[in-house]
Image 1 (cartoon, rainbow, N blue to C red):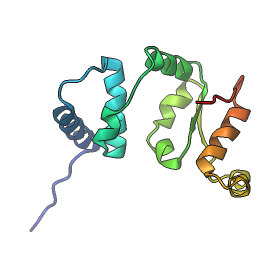
Image 2: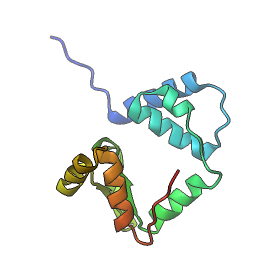
Image 3: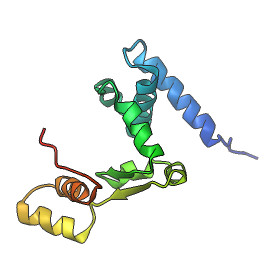
Length: 136
């Protein structure tokens, strides 16, 4: 009788990170930045995306401080939201929000002939405590 081998999620993640480490090899990311790079590649299966990430020198520090301060996390798509450990965020009083499927976002994107992601981020900025719109 055939019995399938069950692999635990932790083992899958560990093997995935091992593959990522082998593929990335030598890099210039700090230890903290590299942890983010690994998660981005793990979630997207896109090594080039991970290799192309750029960090402000205090980005990771600022992100950790925001999480610990219970700040709202906004993602532009549900797939990002799925990859966030909500229990850890809620432990600090934070929450995760995605506006891309909100009725008002869909209508406004259509009216402006632009993407829902753009309108969703604009909505998030308007709702953010002390938020402001950044022009890149």
